[in-house]
Image (tube, rainbow, N blue to C red):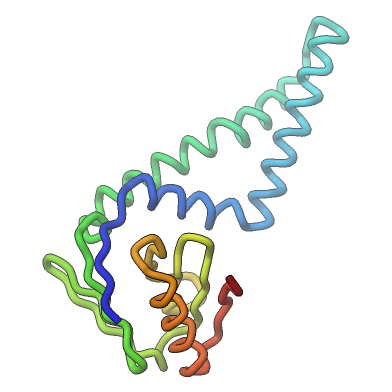
Length: 164
């Protein structure tokens, strides 16, 4: 099976935000930020004044500053890793996963893959517990997605595949 794609910066940033904010600590910090924001608004409307600057700092940091910081970090990473924005040709067989683009080539045997995770719009191929390569599902037909799932199942890989 052969697939050609180019990952746009906006797609990459959305994927990175999803991967970041699915972690429990980031969910907790975001909820905490919203709770503090609600208290700030409540105090402003009820008392017409607000003296708790710690709450303002926590709400600002968790809801505004940190997402902006992450956005800049993801954008700079995308720009500095030229391979991410190149047209990539992926060949998937029963034995391996092969990526080729302008100036790079990577071959990974399925037996060396840590796990595969299928998201709504992406397929993540983990090399270890934290590092992964990705494949946008928008470039694949339903038949190719099914074939990919069958290859993963056939190789007895640790996988989190969708049922759709």
